[in-house]
Image (cartoon, rainbow, N blue to C red; front, side):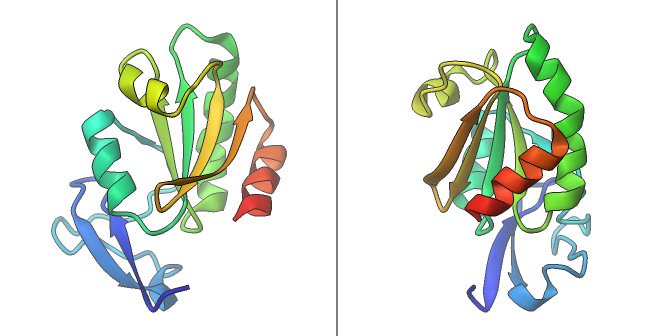
Amino acid sequence: MPDSLHISCPACLATNRIPASRLQQNPVCGRCHQSLFTATPLELDEAAFGRVQANTDVPILIDFWASWCGPCKMMAPVFERAAAELEPECRLVKINTEQCQNLAARYQIRSIPTLLLLHQGQEIARQAGAMDQASLVRWVRQHL
C-alpha cells in the first residue's frame, strides 16, 4: 500500500490525501471537515461517480440497482450494513440504473442488482443477484 491515499469526500467530493497509516482513524475532509468515511453507501449520479472513481485510491464497491426491482430492495439494507464493516477498506457506492443509464451501459450491467468491485478503474470482480451480509463481506474481502 502506498504511503498516502487519495480519498474523495462523500460530502463535497473534494480530493483528500490521507496517510495510509491514518485511514482507520476516521479522517476528515480538509475542505468541509466532514468524515471521509460515513459507514453508509454513497448514492451518486454519473458526474459524482466520475469524480469519486478518478480520485479514490481504495477499491470501490458499486451496487447497480433500480427502484422497481424487488431483489434490489431486499439488497439495500444489506449493502447499507456492509458499509459499516467494509469501510475504509473500500468505498461503497449505489448507482441507480434508471438515472445513470450511461454508467450501466459502460459497465455492461445486464441484470440487477449487480455488484461491481473496481480498483483504480479496473474491474476486480462482479456478482449478479442479492446476497446476505456475511456472503457480501466475505465476497468483497476475498477479492481485495
